[in-house]
Length: 212
Image 1: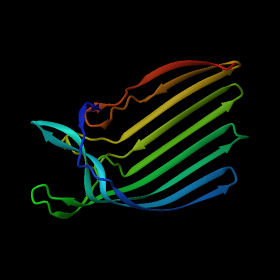
Image 2: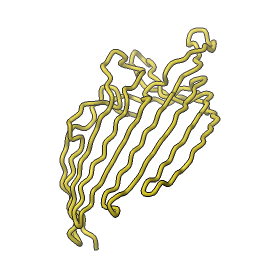
Image 3: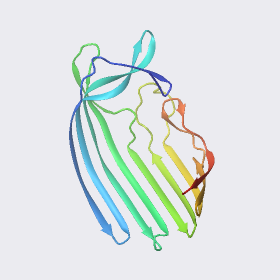
Image 4: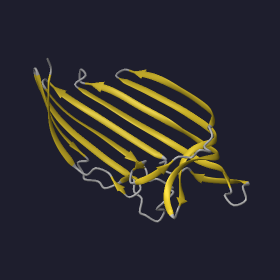
């Protein structure tokens, strides 16, 4: 199997993972605002993660069991509307602390205490969106920020950057037709989610929908 330019092979010795999960949250309504918040804590034993191994002198991905890991954090979400619901917006923030706490030594087979970030996790995630509707026309955007990934498993010396992506859209509802002009990654920001796999550059699309 190929994924993101890498070969993935099966692991017949893969075991099931076990986890204890705890979460507490609340929802608050303040006039035109809706707030959601949560705190979460997850302890994992035999966490299943993809890892790079060498088979026949070739690096491939194989899912492995990692001894002990912890993922904890907080989430906050705010949604609101103003001006008789002509203006709607949303904001979201997630703080993530994902740590590998115990690792099996591949040479001795002994378990060793560690305290390292889990690979491919960002600590900070921020998203926002807004839509302004005036009669038959609407204008909107959505944007997301994902902090720099602290740790990867393959190309550790490659430059890693945060993700900063903004999309714009404008639409007209001319019953029964709706026409939308959208621009993705408007600032043409170069970034990767999978190592050495560049995500989509700026693009513009015009779409038409007809309701029957």
